[in-house]
Image (cartoon, rainbow, N blue to C red; front, side):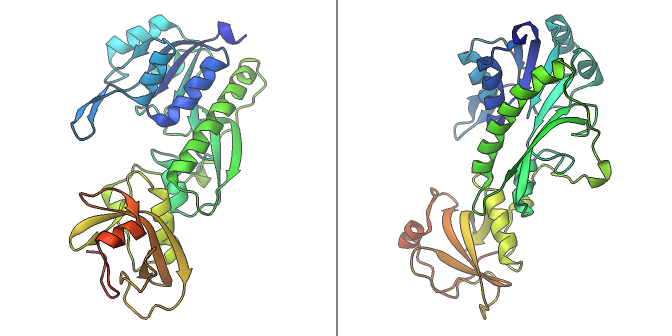
Length: 314
C-alpha cells in the first residue's frame, strides 16, 4: 500500500527532518522533496543548505528548491510529479490553490499545536511564552488559509515545568513524525473523518519580532521565566547590561518581597544572578553577553562580577 502512494514532501527546517525520515523508513514512496533555497548564514555568511535538503540527499531523494512555489516553472515540475499526496512540515511558503487541488489525497500538514490554538509561524514559542501546560501535534488537511484546514488527527502531550523551546521542539517533531505515519494509511483507506476547526476558539502565534524577546523586569516572575523558556535557545530572550545585550537562556522564579526596583541585581551565592521582578526574584542560570560565548551564570560572574544594586534593562 505505502509504495504505490507517490508523495511530494515539502519542508525546510530541523522540525521537518523527523517527518521526512519517518516516511522513508516506513516505506512510503517520496517522489521528491521540496525545500527552500540555500541561504547565507553563520559568521562567514556562506550558503547553508536547509536541514531537509541534507536529509533528502542522505536518502538520495530528488530535491527541488524554488524561490516561489507560485512560479510557473515550479508548478510545471510539480504537475509532472503527479503526486497522490503532498506532506507539508514547516515549509515556509503558502501553497497556492493549484497545488492544494492537484493531489487526489490532498495536502497534509504536520502542525506543532492543538489547532485551532496557536495558528501561525511560531506555535511552539508562543505556547511556552503564554504559560500553557498542555500542547500537542495536529495532522491537518490544508486549505488556502493559514492553519485553518480540517483536522484529521491530534495527539496531546503535557509540558514539563522546566521545558524550553529546544526540548519541546524536538519532542513535537518526533510526535508529528509518528502521527503522520499513522495518519496516511488511515486517510487513504477512508478511516479518518474530517473535523472542521472551531474558528471562534482560534489563537495565534505570529512570527517573532525582535522586541518580543525583550525581558520586562517590571512584570511577574512566571511571565518572565516563560518568555525565557519560550525563546531558549533561539532567538533568546534578552536584557541590557551597561548598554550591551545580555541574553538569558535559563532561569527560575521565587516569590517574595524584594524591596528594590524591578531589574535590580540582588545578593546571590555566586551560582546564579538574582534579578528583582514585580513579585519576587528571577535567578538567571545561563547567559550570554554580547560578543561572548554562552555560559553558566557562575562562570559569567567569575569574569564579570555583578554587585547587588546593579540594574539590568534599558
